[in-house]
Every structure is written in C-alpha cells, then in structure tokens.
Image (tube, helix red, strand yellow):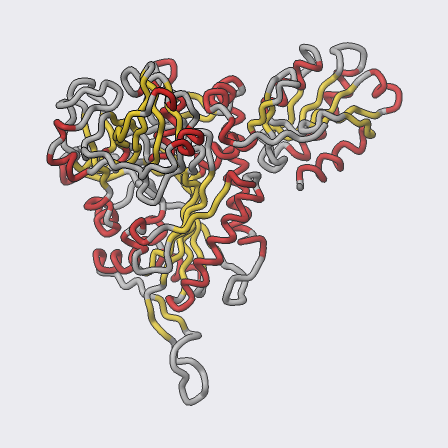
Length: 578
C-alpha cells in the first residue's frame, strides 16, 4: 500500500488533540479540577515520546556532538553538560536584562475580564464593499475581477474589529475556521498572502453583503493614546479596553520564611543564564579549550498573557539549549555551522518537507543580545494552527559576548578566557596567548514544541483503516517500539507470545514500551497500535506453534510477512536503528 502524505494545513488540530487525550499522550493539567490554563501533563505515551526526543538531543548534542563531524575550524565539536537550578540569584536576571526588559504589552477588557497581549491584537480594517455580483466569488476570482483597481487604504487607522493572533496569517486562518470571532460574520476567505507590511486581505461575508478587509497589526501607540476607539475582541464593544501596559513574564516567588520584598526570587524564564553563570566553573574544572559548548536541558517558566494553541505556548515548558563559546573572529562561521546542522537534526527525527523551514531574522527582529552579531535564524514548523504560516521550533542566535560581559559587570568576577594558542608569537615562535570574552552561538530548542511538531507530522488520516488515522513516527521516536500479540487467548499462543515479549523487553525496553495484549480481536489491537504510532506488531498464531514463525505487520504499509521467531530481535534491532 502506498504511503499517504497529508499536508499540515489539512490536518485538524482538534482531531490531534482528541487523539492525544484518547491514547495517553497529553492531558490537561489538574483536569479533575477544571484544568489550569497554560499547563499540560504528559501521559504514559507522551512521557515516553518526550523522553525519546530528549534522549536523541542529548546523545546527538552532548555524547556524540553533531554525529562526530568537524566544525568550521577543522576540529571535532566539543560539548559538556550542566544542570543548573530553576531558581537563581535575583541579580542573574538583572544582569541578563529580564527584570527590566522581559515584558509583554498587555491590554485588559474591563467588561469580560479577558487579558490580551497588545502585540497579538490583529485589526480588521474594512476598505471597501464588494458589488453584489462579485460577492460570491472566491478570493482568487475576486482579485482577478478587481485586478484593474488600485487597492484602497482604509481611511481610518481604527479597526472595525479585532481578533487575537500573533500575526496576520494566523488571524486569517482562525477567522476562516471560526467566523464567530467577529459579530455577525458568516464566512471569511483569505484573498492574498501576508505582505511585507505584515497585513493581508480577506473577503468577509455578512449575510448578503461582502466586504474586502485588511487584516494586520494595529498601531500600538494609537491604542495607548485612544484605547476607547478600538473594539474589543469577540464582543466588538468599544470603550472597554485599557491602554497597553508592561507585564513582566517572570513568575515571582520568595526564598526563605519571611516572604518580604527582600526575599524575592524568580522561576527561570530560560535555562541559558545558568550556563553563563557556570562558565568560569566549567573552564576551571574541565580543562576545556576554545571553541567548546555547554549544553543543558530543563524546565523554564513564563507567565504568558495568553497561552494558546495546545502545548505550543505554555507557562511551564522544557528547553534544550546549547551555548557554544568561540573566538569572536570565528563566530560567524560557527553560527552558520550550528544553523545548518540543527535544521538537519530536526529532519533526522522525522520533520521534513515543506512543513519545516529555516528563516533568517530581519534586522528589526533581532534581540538585544544579537544586534551586533552575525544574526539570528529560526527553524520553524508549519503547525495546523499556524498554516499556511509557521511557528518557531528552535532559534539559533549569535549572542556576541553580551551575557558574559553583563555577568562580569554585575558580579565583579572576571569571566574572560585565556587562550594559550592565540596572540602574538614570542622569540621562540610560540604564541604568547590572548585573553578575551568569547562570543556565543546559541541553538535554543523547545522540547514541548518539538514533541507537538512530531505529533502533528506523524498524524496521518487514513479512512481506509479501522482506526481512521495512524501516527507515522520514525521508529527512533515511537514511544511503543513493538507489540507482541497472541492471535487468540488459548492453546499455547499466549505462552509463546509472553516469552517473545519478555525477550524483547530485555533487549529493547530501555528505548520504549514493548506492548503485550491478549484481549479483543486482532484488528482492534492493530487499530490501537496504529493510533499509538507503534511501528511493528508481531503476532503468534496457529502456524507459529508448528514452525516457530510469527507474522510481523508494518504500521505504515499494513503489509504482513512471516519471519522466524528467533529472527525477531535482529529484525527489530535493524528497523529501530533507521
């Protein structure tokens, strides 16, 4: 059977979320109490899938860095790990700029008590009414019919409506899926792609009347001066929004028993700073030499104003970060190396094709720590909720020496590095050495977003199957590596299957689950494994008792073949290595 490819844009996020709950991948945190917004728990299969991705990153980044390949300087990539505390000294976040600058502009709706990020408010500006004879045309037909007209600009800087989305592409996709976000709107059709100004055109149907509207970012300065002129999302009511105000995204806590403002601390908003504060310790204790990297994975916390899109934007999440230290003159070459290799790595774990892109940031997008560097790029994945646009999966940034310089300034501790292999040469011809603050290349990936991308990529609708869908994980990522089934729960089939199951658990159990189930029809068991993403099912039947062979079923093709019972471990080892 030929493999079926399903573009991300045609997959239903609701269906993916339902499967995640049904098969034990992801649950709403504290669900029995009604849940808590922005927090998610991983079920048995989700926890193993997350571990598989985490282990792949650890192996490919720390234990065998970059698959043993050499970097742009001709030497193997060197990497060491650390594991720093979630709570750091408050001065860490002052030095990093998080206390002062880690803010989102926030707007409150005084009537509904809803809270929005001001930069996630997309305005809908009605620019003209469509003649009745053109109102029922599709977006492409309408643009063709109106090709001779110059696109008019909205005469008012105040939008007629507002929707909540991080950019115009998602706003258009969201409106098409749920027109009720705008009062009285019946249908919304995108007309063109997002342009350089971050806006796009849409055709909005209000009963018998249709309008062309420009959908894009609102003027935040104007929103701050005249919030009463802007309609609230959902209700469309004016005069209920507050002016935007800064909202620090760090979770505040207190250290010790007194709980005064002198005891304030923060849950870390990123894992990177724990690497920078331990830079001197690593150099002094590990005899590492430049260039080298320090890797860390762990929990981080951001008090997002509007957590959304399942686990994509959560308040508690896990990061996989590398801070790679190098001489300033080599930073640009290392930036290109890490950018390209990280893209290849995501492809190796199962993300591929047009759903995965590498996007260089424009100058005005660069973070404060990257403005003097070689740049920043994002590895982005086209999730169903961002299609036709993309959402960030990993960022690769040249942070220059910003972090080490700031921590050196705030702590008073010298963090420069003495490189004995650089500098002017002395009379003997040997270099005198050079002391400098290293530059840093940071590949920073979201583990939870990676898991979500794997789920979205693997989700493959197939109406011809009993399950209606299967998860096409790479075997390395699959949480269930294999299933062993007796065809029926009688004769000696369960005993033979149990022995094979025990053997496979001993050999492969450290990498994932080996399923065993003797109940229900074999078709229902196969369907359940399809939804769980199990790549291979081994079935013991009547013939197995005669010639010691088993049937192996391939998840993707559904084809079956018979192999010897004693050949199963080698067969599975070969497939799981792919």
